[in-house]
Amino acid sequence: MENPVSFPQSRAKSRASAAEGEGLAVAALEFLASEPDRLSRFLGISGLGPQNLREAAADPRFLVGVLDYIIADEPLLIGLAAAREIPPQRIVAARAAMAG
Image 1 (cartoon, rainbow, N blue to C red):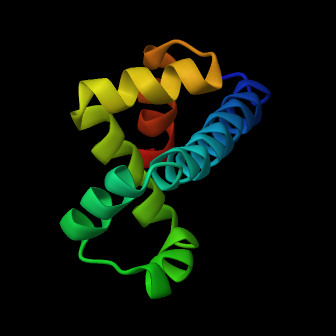
Image 2: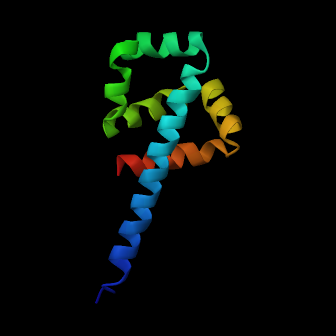
């Protein structure tokens, strides 16, 4: 028989990780925006412009994509991790939690 208490605890832990992922994704956008060349490259690849970036950032699926972009580029991943003073694996784990 399953413990009825374990499911809500697991779910709460998952939400906390997803929330951390969203926070890291927003931090990743700020990191990208801190250097015009980085931001320009990201906008070019994403197909967005400065005028619709803020709107896109409100979509959790977009935020997952931001972390995908960061994770796919090792220097960006290392740079973001250093800026946030966290291990790169934490960014990868937070992205996984966001995706469910």
